[in-house]
Image 1 (cartoon, rainbow, N blue to C red):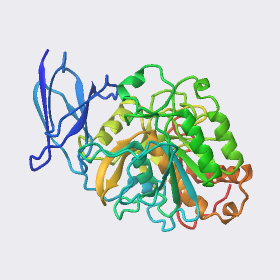
Image 2: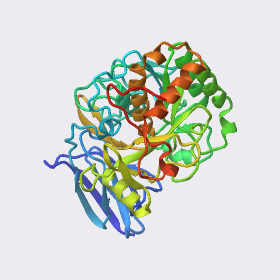
Image 3: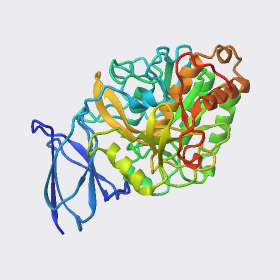
Image 4: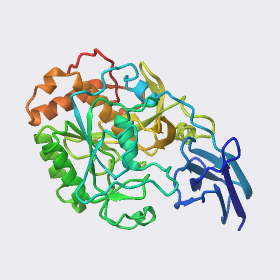
Length: 416
């Protein structure tokens, strides 16, 4: 059994602590993850290193996630800094030059708890008995709920949120006690995030949706969680989503992070807007996870195409698709900021959903007819119609991308 040593550093040789995964080449399927210590170093024995890739997800802010061919002996990786200040996901949805960013619209989020920080300190955090989670001991790693809030509403000057002008209310719905990610392979009763060490309590998710719809009068709620499981485990959640729709609130739900032609629950629930993930073919430096995902898409075949007015894009291989998929949005190589600087890149339908939610919120803020409607199903139906009117098809099969990508520009007439 060969010994493998990993050392992660920046360009100056300073350590970069990280989470690591070891997977077959051109795959994202792993048996779990391990973490380096603060030194950025790790030693372990692996039965075979042939045809294995090492995925590096830095915990220190400011570096791209990356992939590397694993070798026996020393694997020294110089982590590439994230220098970009351009949000490809904003350009891809037509928001890069839009100045009005969601004023007059209320966005709800149901997600994991997180610490209020600069850039998202305007986000209102609620949740029965849920104290905001603190960062890891090293003060750096992002939280799932934080990432969603930043994609939607970060008011930092760099890589700002999709709908900075909207009122954003987050209802935290963590399971208590938290469930370790390794345990989620066993039967469980929560809605799971692939990218975080937590799952959500379905009862708290339902409570959050109704609180956001009734008390906070949310126009749209982002739910970046789901489960490929018997929906009877989540009794009542479908009814709550329907009830919210009847009082003027639409739920946008991540399609799920599994390569299959069936959406996760509750993305396929009637009256939800389900969203899968696409990537940009020209995004991410050599060796980045964003580049790896593009290569996987090319290797699979039939997943690449053009988005008119933007350029070449690809369907993320691990994005669920098929009947009930409403649309797709950027979800590969999304960079979130921290302290006004590019910090972490993320991948998943979890992060495509808030891009779509933000695009819809901006469109609704410009739709005076919508804003004047009473809080009934008519208002929700108008919102769904507006979303569908925004969608622009790609040359990728609708089987993978649904109606396409929500795209708007300031001054666009809302017509459906």
